[in-house]
Amino acid sequence: KFNKIQTIIEKIKSYDCPLKKTAKNIVVYDGSLDAKVMFIGEAPGRDEDAQGLPFVGKAGMLLNKMLSAINLKREEVYITNVINWRPPENRTPTDEEILEFLPFLQEQIDVVNPDFIFLLGGVAAKAILSTPLSLGKLRGSWHEYQSLKTNKKIYTIASYHPAFLLRSPQYKKASWEDLKMLQKRIYE
Ligand code: URA
Image 1 (cartoon, rainbow, N blue to C red):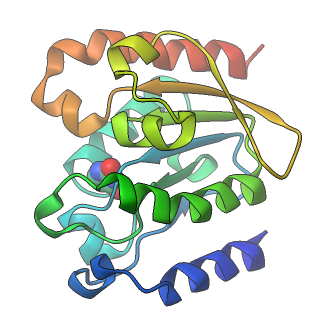
Image 2: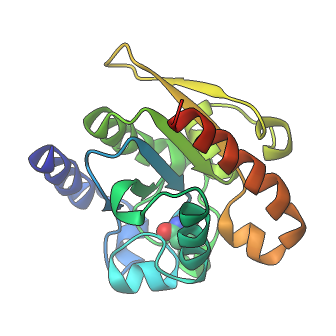
Image 3: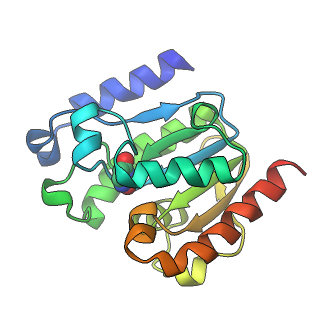
């Protein structure tokens, strides 16, 4: 698995795109290649770009708390983003950018082959569930992600992004319910 992921990382690095020119470091993943659960965010921010690792800034600290709340360790899950280079000024990635990076994300899902995917925020939900529906509509229930290459159906939840939860803590209750829903299925 390690070699396969390295090959994907090399492909992303050699893929020519404007975001690469303004970013400092490529940001692909943190955690375990044997993870049962994969967490997918949006794009690296300033701290992630500086360190070359996903979710290491303020939003990452909240993600760590969310994980430990359901007894998951950061080292045992796979954490990644839809976009692997930091967009200038942290702007939201465009639909074109999402589509450009999606094949790399799909390949990572096939290599890691998780049982569950937890989508953090609207960009990840749009990319993986190919839907324009809002998180308010998507959260709170199970979805299925079907790989194009393998026949496996992966149980998927779409919920709020930790950066959004930091700005709008009133949504933490709903986020907590989504995490509990995941925890329940993991241990079933
Ligand atoms: N926000 C994201 O979506 N991803 C990160 O890695 C950090 C912040």
